[in-house]
Image 1: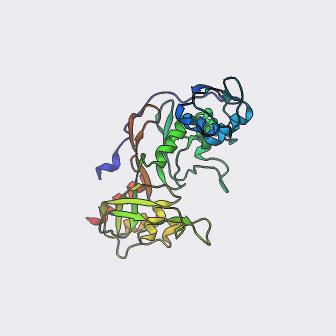
Image 2: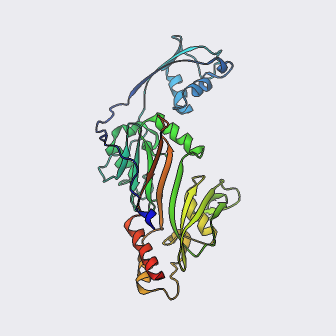
Image 3: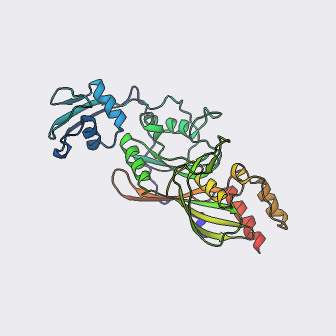
Length: 338
């Protein structure tokens, strides 16, 4: 199981920014609308020329008078001919009012465009009901206050509270837009290690739609009318009553790996929400029984990320070693096999 001990593959010593944005950053853009924009609405043409900003943001800037064409204002619905000279002077609005909190963060890579975070199990990503503070988002705002100018404080994707591993954080609106587009186009590889209950015969793909459970609103479920969800898996190691899987996501639905594997009859070890009563194999040694009974969370770790840098296009790849709790459990499983 040597693959479990891979260190982050890239590091960068650039210091974390420590200056807070006061009322937002100014941005200026000067551009010429292309000839192929002829006949489009002004807001549509602008969105094609500036894909790093959301359509809603561009429409708000047009309405505020921050966007001028040859020195005059156009409405978003006005048609363009192509070739117009556009100048934008705008202050980026803060995206969040969350309070920064100086919590410990494992930042395994940083540059001007992004962070890679190695999240521990137990850390909530976004504030929400029951978790208003002490989240990864609060910690990110303390690490780089300018993330207040980026949607979701720069978070491009998320992990469940009790899932450990790697997350991408964009540090500018432009990087966030590019990374969100890469995620939607399936060009970001997200690979997980998952320990499930039961012995699978081989790898495969689960293609089942996922939606909110009809009666239990904290749960997701495979159901008709849900959003398309695709999970690929291959076997990393079989044990007597468990299987360690290497899982990649083609889509990113809430609880996707947990829901798909439970639906297939192989719930994650420790997953109380989707696995039901904890399963202890009959006749397993006392040491393994104790580890299985005490394991505090779903056995899921975001182990590897691979994607193109949002600004330079340079290929990036990161790996995170298994955390101590999953490592102990796998050692107990391996010991029981001897």
